[in-house]
Length: 411
Ligand SMILES: Cc1ncc(COP(=O)(O)O)c(C=O)c1O
Image 1 (tube, rainbow, N blue to C red):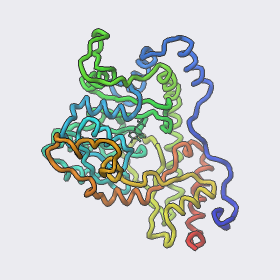
Image 2 (cartoon, helix red, strand yellow):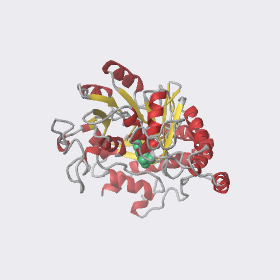
Image 3 (cartoon, rainbow, N blue to C red):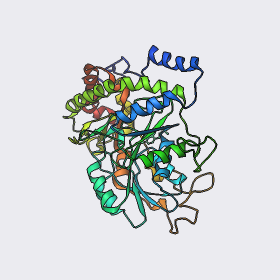
């Protein structure tokens, strides 16, 4: 296959993969119309998008807000999580899944994941349930839907809230039903890197009217729907979405289904094309995921198959050949300064406050499979999956070329 590009050979591919975000005149027109209307504030576009997105996820209610982090916070507040409540979360996720718990003085309890899905392991979650546990927060990581049958059963058995961090799962379906309202409620992010975006933005969806109303109030300075403007019932923040964002998202939403199908087809193509390469491990097929959003295509670099080659070197070689892949999270959440008493500001509960009533030392937390995934994961960005089949074959050929020339890479 020739000399590796990283060693001075010709790269296998020179054409760039698609970039993100995807937009055209339709988005520009939609935002311009709102600007021209002079109606910029939390009005009909926001309502229209909330109804459209909730329906898209097969949920009854949608409550927009400023971003996915805010959506997590209103979800936690609306489910009544508070001081001293233990909440089981993964540590292979974006910081907000856990840090939004700290902001409501709840206690993140990290459980380990399944290596071949990247998601919370139901058995380890069950082992971590105590009489203080109030909720489980599965993350559908990279769009791979967590085992919601197992988590629903656990939530029922132990009387826990089930909150989906569906921030990577736009349009995802578990046995035909949309993600987000498979438990009590779920949240989505529309930040710039996400598969549907308004730069920033978020939404909570739910089939539970009470949770949706509480979430709306927490996102709208504690107001109650259909009550007076200057009567505030809860200590809510101002987390409202603007009309410009909602108008943009309505257009982005109209593109999402087609893009999701294309990513799914290309990911399946990649699964077939990469299946024979011994140096990497693909994610486990899951027939209960009947529609998968791909926020990224994830595989693992198997270090024992690459003597003398690090994952980082492998990824450099892939990128030098014109491929797209990177390492993702370098460390589990609990190794971040905020949990390791290395923060620069005042420490949150449970590290330095009386609510928990127990010692919590995150420096003692070790989740072997989470740490292994941090060391082995390779992420292909979702925009790459918007290319053509031939471009997927290029990516597979690139990985095969690097595999076949690994001795050259190690030397
Ligand atoms: C799994 C997950 N949860 C929550 C968030 C937070 O979303 P936002 O960036 O919109 O605040 C993100 C964002 O990357 C995420 O990846």
